[in-house]
Length: 153
Image (tube, rainbow, N blue to C red):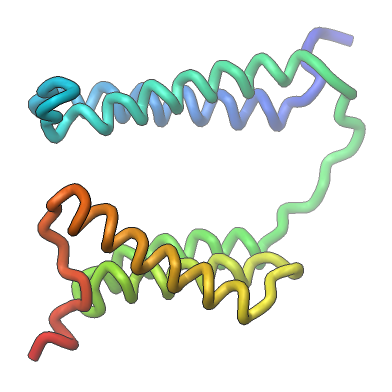
């Protein structure tokens, strides 16, 4: 029978391991800094390390639990909407700014779930958009375009 009980968990764990390792290797090209004065490579290095850790955990989970018995179908609609939301964020960041791009991304990604409702999705989009602006621009002092060049004249 073999030790592998959940092949999907193993595949997910390996993907997380590869991405985490890639991020950590790329982060070496930037100044690290320290905890008081973080350089541009510090945050990617930490996130890459966390991805590695999660990859190890998920890979280990593939050896435990109930054995997967059937292959499910790939849910195309959620896949397209979540990937599309990420792409839209990148495309819309300059024209409409951080707040608008986050709001569009959240609303499109929320539509991927059949349990999603419009009002909670809009409220979440507003909270995440303005919360991100507060955290990154005002809290961390990052220079980001909040409303985009379409709205700045």
